[in-house]
Length: 190
Image 1 (cartoon, helix red, strand yellow):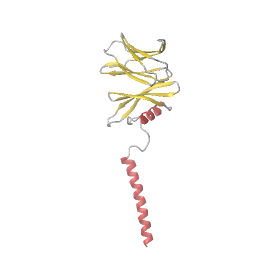
Image 2 (spheres, rainbow, N blue to C red):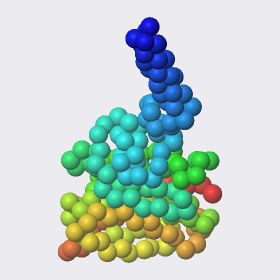
Image 3 (tube, rainbow, N blue to C red):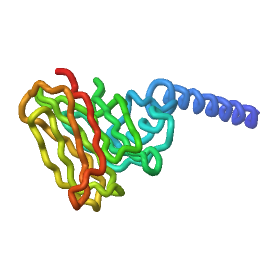
Image 4 (cartoon, helix red, strand yellow):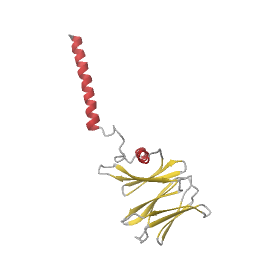
């Protein structure tokens, strides 16, 4: 009789444990289950996983920057290919969704953005690149940027005025002033 009571209590305790685990997984824990690229934190490992899943290949995160609660990351898709991924905020506090990513073997990666109603551009360069300085142009406005070769570069470049041109040209030069790479992107519409 005593053994039957203990067995019944053990079975009841085991069932209660399974029920509690089920309730926790279904109703409480948001972390268990498939990774959702449209609900991530600003943690670099989550940004990298979201980029990997979205572009369909493994990446290495090189650098991140934030502007107006938008996150931009410079990543290496494979040796010789770099790209920029963008993440936008969602309704949940401190949570983001994957917006877009582009990558190529070009030494310069650029993503157009809008900054306070004016065009801007996020420019990414790997530290493995021989590029020493950049010239970023939109219509008649030109901005020079010197780079450090010891670290990956991910910069947001703001233009001062809303100019009529819808193209942004980024040109990279080596230390001697020889052009090494160029890329052109369309400015974002207002």
